Amino acid sequence: MEPPVLPADPFFASAVVGRGDTYEVRQYIADLAKKQDWAAMVQFAEAQQKRDPEDSDWGVIAGHAWLRRGDYSKASAAFARVIQRNPEDVGAWNLLGESQRRAGQPGQATRTLERASIIGRTSFATFFFLGEAYRDSSRLDRAIPAYREAARLEPEYAQSWFELGVAYVRTGQREEVGKVVERLEKLDPALAKELKKRVGGGGK
Image (cartoon, rainbow, N blue to C red; front, side, top):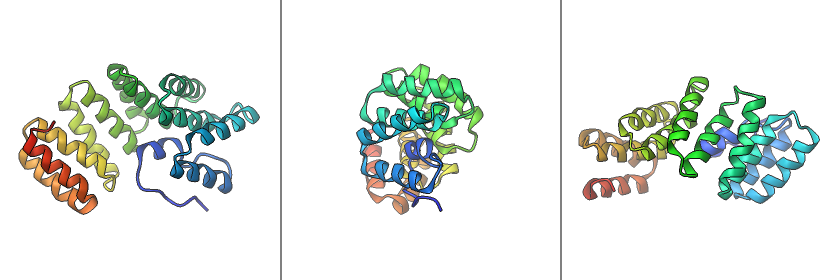
């Protein structure tokens, strides 16, 4: 058995899904994520890591909790150690890139996430975070296809559609914005309403 599926979330998908060697452990991690108890998640992951230093899952889970707590240097260090041990861990690449973006390094984040996109071609989280990094680098021409791919891979994740719509507004693609609004009205009416406001306000 697997833990109950939470709503699509790139953080959850990158850091939590499938990590942990028993159902009970996966359930506990999922519960901590749902409650946003990042302090308890750090404590649990670091205790598990001491017991099994070779299991890179615990480094990702601890790094995820540091990231959500806003300690980007500790998060980046944790993900870098995981990648050194397991360079195919796309979740670690995803969250390293997001840590770099949130630390005000969008250029570094785009390089990290471009690397992740080669490894994780089916990870919606990779392309969502890549879209965010391109947006913060003022490269909307690249952000748009990244968000579009994230939405294709996980069509129920409303935030991808919203960010895609905002990018369309900012590049003057009004017809495409209308299509995104229609989609959001089914997924998240509040985001659809916000996107319509952005159209009137020039996308700011």
